[in-house]
Image 1 (cartoon, rainbow over the protein chains, first blue to last red):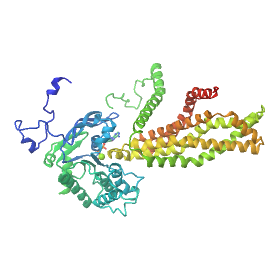
Image 2 (image 1 turned 45 degrees about the horizontal axis):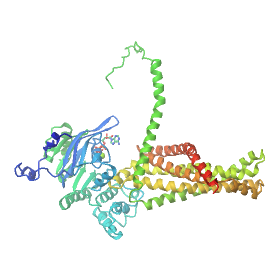
Image 3 (image 1 turned 180 degrees about the horizontal axis):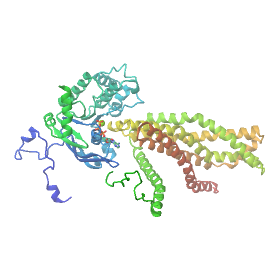
Image 4 (image 1 turned 60 degrees about the horizontal axis):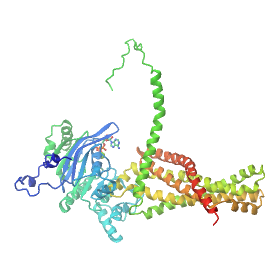
Length: 285
Length: 298
Ligand SMILES: Nc1ncnc2c1ncn2[C@@H]1O[C@H](COP(=O)(O)OP(=O)(O)OP(=O)(O)O)[C@@H](O)[C@H]1O
Ligand SMILES: [Mg+2]
């Protein structure tokens, strides 16, 4: 580090439009540094063998916002999400969580950062040796030593009811004994059990009926409004994406080709994005 | 793959003018060495990976929380679950071992020495090694299958996202349980084997029971048993570490899980048989020293 580098206070990345921040002129600004993003990804590259799956991803997600990741199948959405929580190590680039680069953390620090997160897996990833009840109770039993058995029971029942799962009927069953959509909902309940500040959803509503899908969307918005929770959602459901998203990230072959609002997406000139939304509009006409 | 166009066949179906190049002798030698070298390099890389994996296990071992209930579950699985096959195989090993030793020792009139001979080899070698092989077949494959399934269904990733360290939650309890249980199982194996050899030589072949027991008592030293305990503990750790490593690094669905289980059993069995030689060599000076110091006049 030379002294010259330290003088550089202007960030390299152009900050996304935020009226509250834009109103601050250089003269009126008291704090020279903006608060860190909940998630910031810089020049992220990931290669599996010889196949480059992520090709230089840049994104910023504000605290307390909802970002929806859209894109075709196999384009690298799930891989991108797994980098955000440190499940995969990038080939190059960095991932900042609340301003802290998690790609350089040791196992103990990474564990600390992960306690901010909840994640819903595309295939639910329930512990199949535990009952559904124990799956939901697991994060509470691990991290909330202050809670009594009765308190945990109350919370598990509340969470299962929240996702329309009957704790008395489905609770004692094992994940192999319930339907795919029910598994997904158990996964949702487990992911939000600890009220994490950042929740990653990998296709939370794929395979759910429209009513439950709507409930999940509502829950994501509710969590944002009442608790200020940051949500990152991978979805193939464009209607619900438009409904909940503050920011849409469109991934195409390992690159983010559109970043912005619903209008930005619909106005995009990228051939794949165009076709993606044209197909959808045609279907919904 | 279109940068080097293949020589076009002639229209009449004749092969192209130039026959494809036959690799020269140097090239063929190179290919041969490469073919031989690849598995060697892979093996060395994998050994390095297992050492790193062991390092991670040791890193998480002393950290809280210690998983008592998980560890007890595996103590039960490995210890109690293997008890029956250990008793059974131990007993039959003792029977046949007593019989064969008797056949040999009779030739130079040393029937009285069958007791100590069988007990020394059971306590020092056969007990730990054969018990470890039993546990590798029974629990090792189970560990690799369970962890492998958890890996391919992303349950291990799910643990990580919940800020629960998978190594600490899944691997440490298994390694601790196996390390504690194997010396006990090996002792049971040895005991059953000795009983078998006693039944064979004394009850069936009529060797004098007093002589049999006296010689055994007279000739055996405590270090014979210590060596067995130490070995068994090492084998337990070895089998659990290798099996967990294989499970942890599974990829590719049901077939991957099956391959991991097979590889876990093969690798841990081989490592036990190689490891027993290495540990024996390393332990000899220590245990000899122990005997020497105990024999010093007070
Ligand atoms: N562990 C891995 N090893 C090798 N390749 C992988 C691995 N994980 C993902 N890939 C590859 O990376 C690409 C992106 O995968 P990813 O799971 O991110 O797709 P996706 O965008 O989530 O698709 P979908 O919408 O179908 O879930 C795929 O082509 C996949 O083959
Ligand atoms: Mg995916």
